[in-house]
Image 1: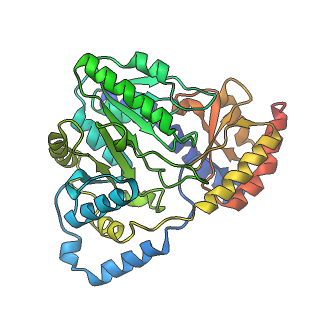
Image 2: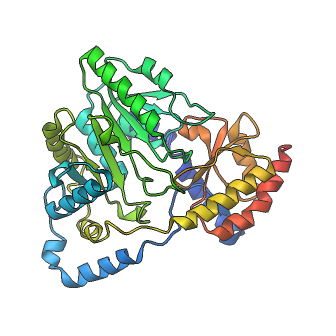
Image 3: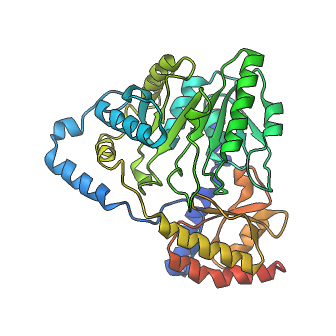
Length: 395
């Protein structure tokens, strides 16, 4: 018999993953080319050439015993130094290698830092809509998840409500910008106001409140949009980063945490993150991918590919009568459902072999998420069916 906690996890498993599996079954029945799967945020852009070249060269030239062996739980020192230098150049920070902990992707990093920080019963505040896996991560360490309702006009955080929800038990606030599922980038004004609220609440309660910035989509922005680097605005900020999207390496599971000296008890947090990395069974981030990352810090995926998809899908859906805000980053459209119960709409879409994810998975019912990290041809072929779907609901 599995544990009661795991029973709950299984029963409330990821709708995104369930939809993805359903898509695979549907493809067997009607042909993969006739399924329009917009469920999973799986990059469809090839990794930069530098990544492939680095992998081949490293495997062929570096000492296999060193390459595939253990290292510090925080990762290779030279890799961490290189990442710190890169961040400093880009954002005018003052990090060193000791402020970096290499992680098994952003998800691994979030689990490491939450295990390090949370005591049972302490609160973690998130802003709806949010990546649904946060629920599991927080519950895993017996934290209490508190959800700030969405501001559906702009999808910027509702800071007035947020301020009222911060209590003496609040230990962590998680932000995700560019946001999954909306594609919204939190503005500098939003971040500054949030930092003011957190400082005031820390002083009021005599506690430390940590702001965790979950940043797998930082590099995926369009036009002149700037994504604020949060350590510059609030001292108790910890950044979780992943190369899954920026270098199209989701299956390689490589990322890092930034734990700045300015953060309260930073030395203890760094020590705790090392131990948490072992306790969670990661031991260390993948050694080969660490070596690859060091050589590819300036490499980038072709964001124009996603931008073409964004423009075509956004304009096509608007023309069909759907309502949504235009994303500034990431590769998702968050579309208002034409009926209040968005799961009914998602089920109707399946008749056209369109797979989309209900907004309730992101604590924002009444909306659906469409991941446009697919081929341009898939979107072109799907558009007539989206228009048929719109007509079915009277749009």
